[in-house]
Length: 254
Figure 1 (spheres, rainbow, N blue to C red):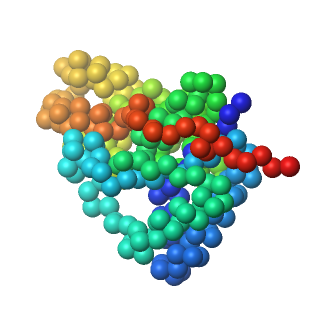
Figure 2: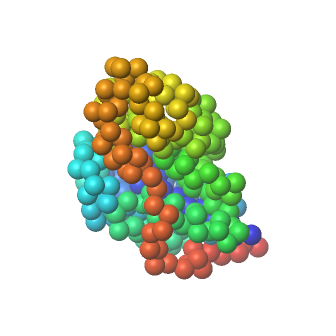
């Protein structure tokens, strides 16, 4: 069975870069990133590996909502200038890169979904909780920094909602990390309470007369933001990949 290790490039590299004392030391960063990739390959024993990078094109999410990811710290200049060197160095060590046109998340989700549809297994290396919506027994998510799997069960416990309610929850409560607005005035606690009673975002709005007056007004006023947020948090699973599986096959070791 094909086992594909799919690494969220900027999620890994920015955190490794932030932890190094000399921000302009790209050679040191190359070694650290390559070391992390070697460790991942040794632990997971994949047949294929790819590190997926964000591109510079305007994201469909940003086009839909200008405030998406607004206020995020820009990539440090030294890191931005050194990315091409990092990719070339990793390629020399059998870690192939795949460049997304805009956001890597949708490309990663598409790769993982396509692989499991042909009987493979995908391990996504990222700390981004958005990937938890990919509920398939052959898609797993690995947190490299805590050396643990991010399971659906753990996320259910953390958020207080069922897996099938993750998108509804984020549409209500928002996601501060990505600046997804949610419904103004409806925080995580209220979102959990509403979903326990009404089960879904659609049910909440179709039964709005059963919601308390104060909350009902917030929900009515924030209806468009809820719809927008619902779209923003969903991963796209049909991105054009322009790549072949064999590009990412690791050489067999004796």
